[in-house]
Image (cartoon, rainbow, N blue to C red; front, top):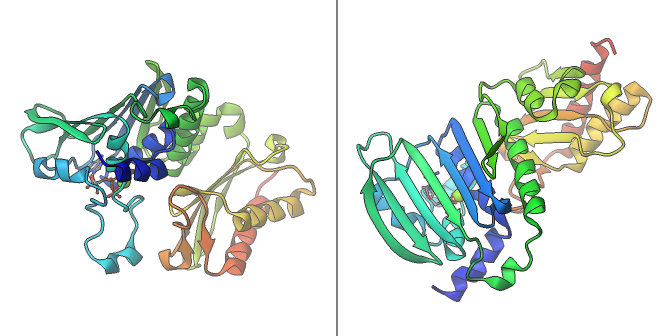
Length: 325
Ligand code: ADP
Ligand code: MG
């Protein structure tokens, strides 16, 4: 196994939550409607991700673990059209370089599946095996061969916390997918996947929050931006921004301009300066936004910031005005 692979791995795989992120995004890209994430000891010894997506063809399995192997870009021009979450072709090779991986996969149209094992970048074998449609990745002993990196891990509780937050954001950003999350054998979250955002909010934040929500919808579907979701009434406002959730084209983001537009409208209307609970989905044409500012950060850039600000501000204000508080 090459040093280059280990170095490359460091950029993609920083901690257990990065493994979960890459594998779940692959599952979403594969069209899964149900995804199960199981972890033990904060994901340091055990991460299992099961999806019911497209599966991987037998011949493609070893190739998927090669660096820069991706089935998601056919031509260079495709780069501008990319809608899938991951497309760098680095995740599987990076994860395999620093852990013990077992993959079981079966495409719907195949009768039999395959099991493939790779440890520290070394293939350990492949065999045919009966399997349900879809893909299961089991990642054991993360960083077993890179002790220096293992030292930077926090406690299992802290690492598990990162994973929980990530899964919660996924459940809110993809309410049409059923997510099940298990920690040390216990189910921590299970969403229905029936595309009901309010239900997903209920499952994550509970009844008290869900009761105090105002629905936000942009009316004019021709606008550059479409906004759908919820903002909390003042009774559930907070002293910090931890309950502000924004998604641009299905991806959880941090955006100063979005945050400011929402807070400005909220503060204008409420005449108070606490922070709202929000769960807002923003849809905008791909060419008007750059969500890949950095692959692992959640930043986003809009080509027309003022327009984005104005439309979000107005949508929030309208939503608040039509509601008894
Ligand atoms: P990328 O996602 O950037 O293409 P990855 O290294 O994450 O690169 O994955 C490599 C390839 O393996 C993907 O392009 C895809 O073809 C395949 N793959 C990975 N995970 C899955 C999955 N859960 N279901 C189906 N195919 C998958
Ligand atoms: Mg990927």
